[in-house]
Image (cartoon, rainbow, N blue to C red; front, side, top):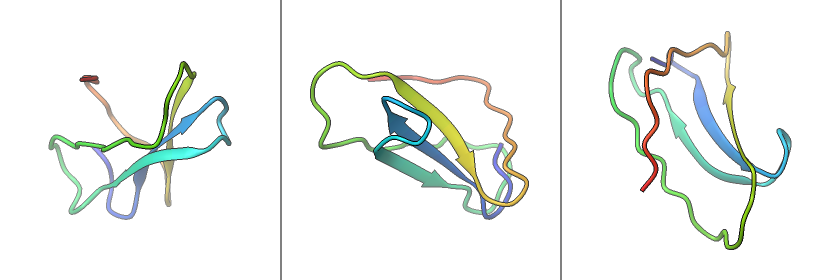
Length: 65
């Protein structure tokens, strides 16, 4: 669950690395978020971070496809 004004941010190679995808909270509450990722090739470390006021989230699962 993301609170209004928060985002999930995907970065590669470090916590401050290149942003490869983001998704916002919409209206808050429990729901499924899809983050499109593009322009990345090769093998990288993936960092998932939060931005926005209060930046806390409750994530129950991730699916990569």
